Image 1 (cartoon, rainbow, N blue to C red):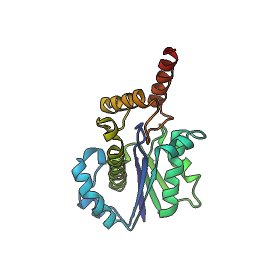
Image 2: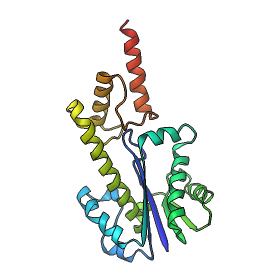
Image 3: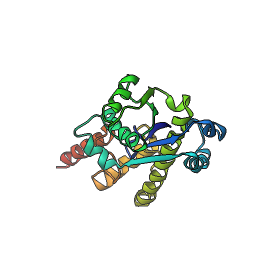
Image 4: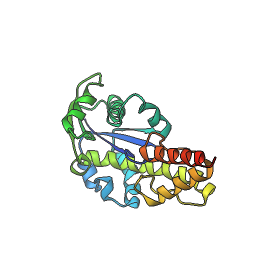
Length: 218
């Protein structure tokens, strides 16, 4: 059995990190239905493919790590170490003989070795950059992760947007829509909104600037 694992939401300052793993005997059916890297597919196509992938898979696991948990874990580990931890949890549950992972470490082999060091057994590990584009099994995992994260971001948007009458955006720090939402929220309420990753530099700068403004008010 082979497994592919990938994540969605590593970089955003809003919402969860989602890691998905899928277990199949071979990737022939995934190729047949047109699985590809989630970033190369439209949201509509990802939504269509996700239930098909779940049906094809012998098993799959999805771990959703909320922003608050990410902030807590980052007090004691780097983002790469956090991802190693979550990937290993998924692979341990699926127990593949061969595992393909999308490496987030600049040294792709090190990422694979770090995952192996957390496992109770030693599958064959293929850890590569852009694995989601080159291996259909990882592309399938990337689709499950992305669709799951998008669902959570939509829920967060429904919760928070009415309070400002502004769109939340993608949640990425470079997104001007998200920047405006965060800035407006902090200016109005004096704190970060729920589901924001407080350990992210973008969020910390906003809070620091807000505190400075308040001191200047005296």
